[in-house]
Length: 444
Image 1: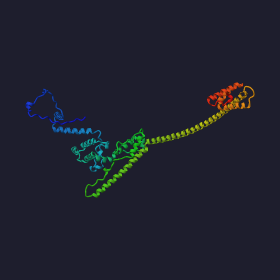
Image 2 (image 1 turned 180 degrees about the horizontal axis):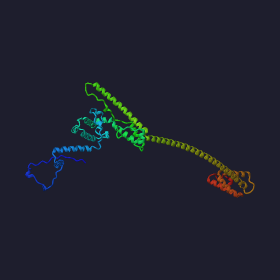
Image 3 (image 1 turned 30 degrees about the horizontal axis):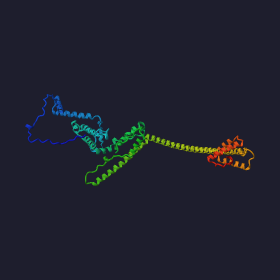
Image 4 (image 1 turned 60 degrees about the vertical axis):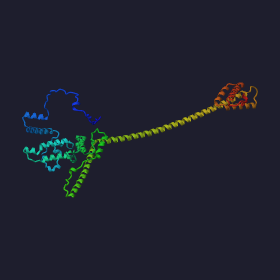
């Protein structure tokens, strides 16, 4: 929580307040304590050093300056130290645009990765070694050409715009792509990775994807090559421009040189784009991962095709089997229906035959019982009446009732017994409402 500051005015003293009368002590000072004070600090150390070595101020300052120079040289002799080329020491300062600024300062192994602090330390080291005054004191010639090269290199590398222009054309930072034989012998990814790391310094998009290795996924590899085939470079070639004249008298010449420089930049940009694309093509052509992915893709497509064909074949076989099963079921159903129909017809014929048989039994029962007459010869009218009543009863009952009635009449011989059965049946039919009372007159 942020602190809040409030400005409050001091209270106004009353008019009758005075220091003698209005002052009131609210406390007392503590008693004094004896303490031992030791002298410290750089000035005391310098005083002690001069006393110990019996030096004057000027002698001590000179010796300290020499020790500081040696210390700087010793401190910078590690990461920013490299042998100096004798030919480089003889460079003409006027040809500063053609010099390798990083090599001049001893930063060849860092180049575009060198920090501002490293550049300043390298400059300090070089100045201490190659300053004209130091050379003159050592008895050397007062040639300050290389010292001017150092100053120019520092001036360029500490200016972000000019350093970017120099980095754009710094051939010392480029990494040559390996040959096919070298890539096969020393390791494909080990040799190609530094090439793309070096080229990646020109990318507007950071970080730049790495080439990877044999374990990289297909997505990572595709992302890598898509990035480089659509590479967006900030690289420019202004550093190699022809110097434009500053005089205002020859404006036509100035415009001519500017147009010439612009055309040269465009041409170099186009050539660099083609170079980079050819480099990516070369890397892609030898990348075994691409071949592996294509083989896996073809295998996957073949597998999908075979699976699809197998599925289509199975579906066709299933459809054919289903059709055969349906035809079989239909045939079995037709046969069952036919058999059921035959059985039904057979049962119907059997029931029909049984009904005919039972009807013959019923008619024979009255015939054998003298048409239900106890004695004497039955008249034709009586016979017709009995037979009509038999037909009436047979017409009102179903086959089961017909069979039951035939079973009751079975074994009955006398007219009384037969008539009793018929009378009982007629009574049942009358009670059921099937026939009316009095319809079967001979069986009442």
